[in-house]
Length: 234
Length: 270
Image (cartoon, rainbow over all chains, first blue to last red; front, side):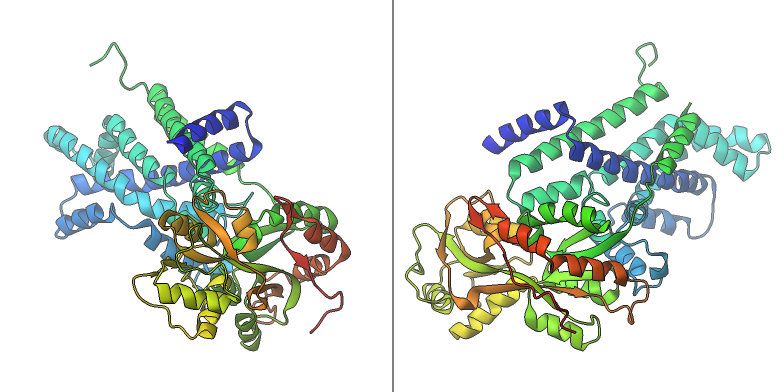
């Protein structure tokens, strides 16, 4: 209990003094996770829409696989990306291991199935409503996907935010592929793991509170900017 | 609206990738980093040599694996046998001793196995085994874990049973576990002095020569991995064995105690 109180006071102090280290690792957390979220959305949202409007033999298997991949263990993803990017691995020549790029790659793999699955759910319902209209207009499949993506954009924002939420709090994969290097790949979650290892629970909790606050702020900001949940509209 | 949001976000992210100066990636043991010594040395190395050191904080076993894979340019570790095997396999050209500190045995204040009076580390371990008192092991193939295993073999005990708890974690996490369970644990002095969550744990055994802990620097063999920054590694090695390093390492105090003792020789032992 004492640790929680001193963690809270420490968090307030760090934020009030704009602690240079805190600002640096928070910005890096945002850079990595927002990049991963944008890339994963660019892959996952069209994939979800395409799965909703297409009918092919293995569709059910693909959707079930996608749903299962939502629970992909980050540690395993980290390990696989690590082995691929290691100098002794197949992609070693790129020299990407222990860089923010490696962390983004790992997070994209983790959250793309989440974003695609939620997008698929949302778009499937809309497709049921739009089906006759879009067919009778002789739209191409690409046009249908584009229309459905645009008209369900608010639900898709939720899909992307779910991916963001998973990625910003993730530590297992980025610890392995990023290495938690000070001033290079240290982010909020890996810094929390480090402070916990040092037995400095107050500092670890302070960083934890900052992380939660940051996730809240990003979610609020995106909702405000995209105009969801306005008072004048039900 | 959303499209504009995403495109401006992408722009910011692309611009945010920084350019970096000369750097050297080095895998170091947890004790070196968690002791706070790294925070003292890194800025000085950057100032004197212009090299930015990037530290990967891992156990000795993992540090050597990173070196063998060519994922780091150099390692700073503390397990002589493992280091010599590393050189014999051609992963490094040589090892350079930099400094030493010591291991200590800590345990619960009421000391159920009565190790406080033990003359040696091996005797202390034997008493812990006889009493069946909880003991937390790193169990992660780190330098500290190897040192612990060599003390067990010296004590003539093969540790196993419910009292012997291998965590497979770093020094800090293992200390957290020991303080949570009121268990005995072998730790390096630096990690102990820097550890804040001690609860009921106190220092019980120290000073046995078997507890000596030598740190050495090993640059990764550029013949094996042409991409490693051998030049920077040589510069950092020269700095770490030089007079400025001696002054800073010997002068580093935590809670009034000297943590590391510089013992590098200035000439290169190839």
